[in-house]
Image (tube, rainbow, N blue to C red; front, side, top):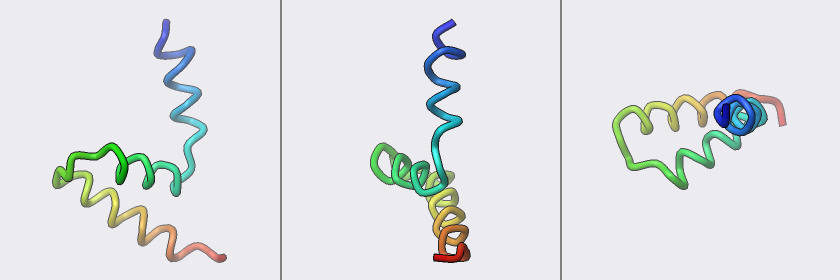
Length: 49
């Protein structure tokens, strides 16, 4: 199946920073996306540099 061969490996390779970038780039400003963005930003700010 295309999902298990192409999509699952791609999704597993994303980092939190990558996921945030994807949502910001391709999102539609839905309420749930705004929550995800806030969560990812808080998570990334709490990580050691």
